[in-house]
Image (cartoon, rainbow, N blue to C red):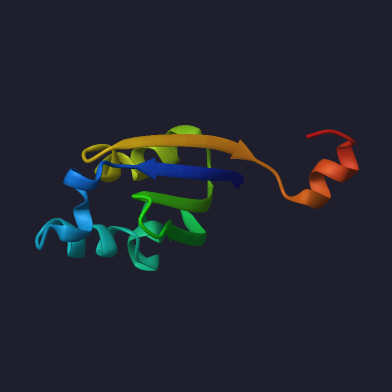
Length: 96
């Protein structure tokens, strides 16, 4: 499993938390059970208050599997996927 940091952004006008149909669907999508079915492990998730920005730390087989998992969020805004490493790995290899 590879490590990824994912950033999703949307406009205030397009905020899915305000949509009574979309909001529960997004929460269900981020459930452990659903992520497990997609081969994704959610290590952390946070929304920047007032920033309309969701940040996830995920483990997945590859960037494409993470991209597939994030397609629901791509429908309402941007999704950026960054390959990442734990600090210990970066120190061991001597470079970010």
